Length: 463
Image 1 (cartoon, rainbow, N blue to C red):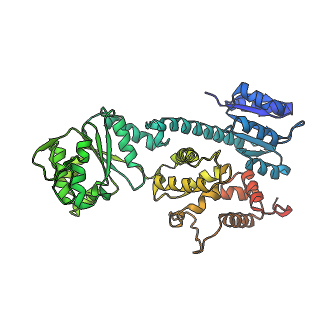
Image 2: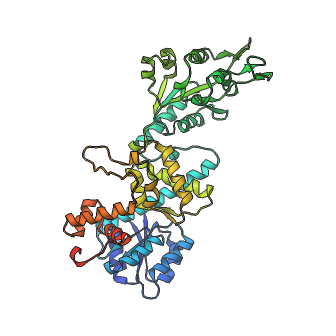
Image 3: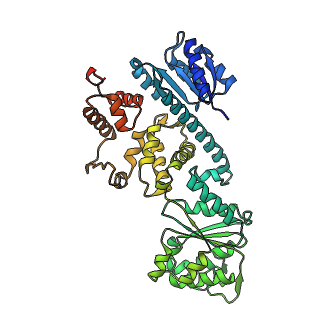
């Protein structure tokens, strides 16, 4: 399906030539010569992106921008301006414009910015649909992200889920979302209409672990005053149980768990009558259980019994394409939680999130988004809102060919880092902004926007 572009410009020649160009680029295009009719045209044409000239004859492009946002809050609007209008363009960006393009328009840059705007809009729409499902506590494929790696993993999970009894071992670093994959296995399995119980083995006191898992009879130990307490396995009968951080179980309890997996039977603590259960067991760990077996910390027979099927959830740094999707999902969540109305996330903020090395994975991303949104007073989440929240120990590059930033112990403001970086780059390129933009991996318009934002003087020497 072709993306729809609306051009709002009172110059008929500009509209005609732009429309011809965009149609050749496989977009569906309509034009509007009067800024006052922009909203009416939007309601008729339903564009994915609006190209809006800053200077219109009868009305200001900034006023049209504000009017559009009242009725179409999330519609990406790209402002078109001349070099002399950069200050106004910066003002437009602060008012919620998606981006701005300098005249004369560069075809490749135009196509790139429009494509990114469409992608951003589609991402937001998908996240909104996802949150409607989350309200019903239903997980879908889309919940996990959009990268090929995660898509292939989800498809494998769905196949493994079809069996109602197969034990699955879910591996991955802390914070990658192993428990969410376990829940998805349950929801895709024949047991989906029954209970799903999760227990974190690392948080159970060792002296109470057996009772938590298998229950106890009255008087079985000090404090066991109830007539009978059902354990988690008994409560999960008919459904699914997740043993999270299973590597934390004692060797003694591992023996009893192995018997339960083999025979589907156990004795409550202090009990004399065997209890039979019908439960699917999923296990999750951030440890390498094969190494734990070699070191004598985990039983080999239990490892093989758990490892009937295996899921390895990749760390967030290996699935950077999922970060924008996840970030927008958390934005939606915390907008509701904190009663905020944050409209979106800037491209620079998304790029910063993608460049950061997430040692804490999705859990760390979620925590940073929560803190940033809680403190945010603006309409858009910007780069300088999230970067100061990064763990400085994880923020530096690790490859030999990458730049390593040394941060003073007392810290440093991100604006000063960016300003110094741009100034030094301009010195290296003898003030040539085109070359400086290439060195920094920015478009020329973005470099000019940054210079304006950071108060870097634009003199004749560097034009």
